[in-house]
Length: 115
Image (tube, rainbow, N blue to C red; front, side, top):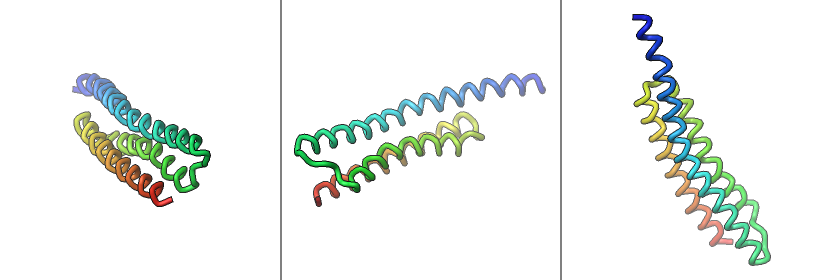
């Protein structure tokens, strides 16, 4: 019985690592979108001969931090669960990260429109 238990432990760890890396790709796609938003808005400001406001910088940098924090929170909260439970925690973290990113983007556009 102990041999079966020890054989299952590395396989479950490998499954968790694979799941975490698979979801990392989805979260990195969000980071890529946030960084591209920052680069584009910096370009727009440069073309207009202006600089981004401090509020715009904070909101854009928060947009980069949201997916990073979401993935880290999903890994930490799901690390002791079964591989399926771990994947479900990461799906929930990805959904929450997407929702927060969309809210952040809407807030950013309303702030830029007001300035």
